Image 1 (cartoon, rainbow, N blue to C red):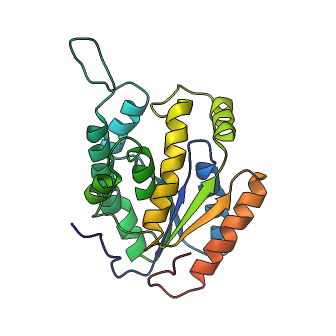
Image 2: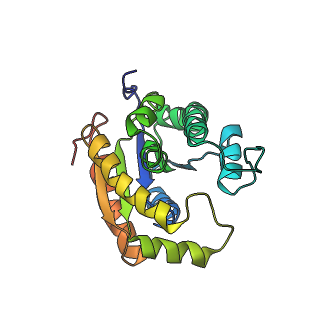
Length: 226
């Protein structure tokens, strides 16, 4: 299955990526506020989405959806979760992302395919994970907000809430390494820019805005790889 091509559209898709605790959710909202103040029509969204499959994924991440067995319950199989992410992405694109792009909006998404390659690719063949996501629309710009694993862990602890499926330090270390492999893979054909997330939040926003403004200053089309 060949990777999806960017459809004709007048809007732009910008994705923020990073470990849980990197600050991608905060930066999506801050970027949206800044871009709206500059006159852009902006849609903010996230993956897992708020659609039916996305809701199931969030239940699986917090242990509310498990796999029963003779020895007790256990998390869903990695393959099952990877397929659920791919299915949710299909719904998300059709329901929210593509209509907004066709309407000329700037879409800011908290995570997309790179997350699947990093999180599911940490325990499954990355080539298979990419194959089941071949339908996904490539981003015009992906901002990878990088932070040390320890910093991400402190931020997750500070915000509270139940521990999620991928929060263990050993898993986070594997995911962090897998992000590097995913960036090398996707960066061959997409515009992926690294942002230092271990800065004050205002400085991270400023660095992100610099890259976003460069993109919005270009005509729609395939972005150069950096």
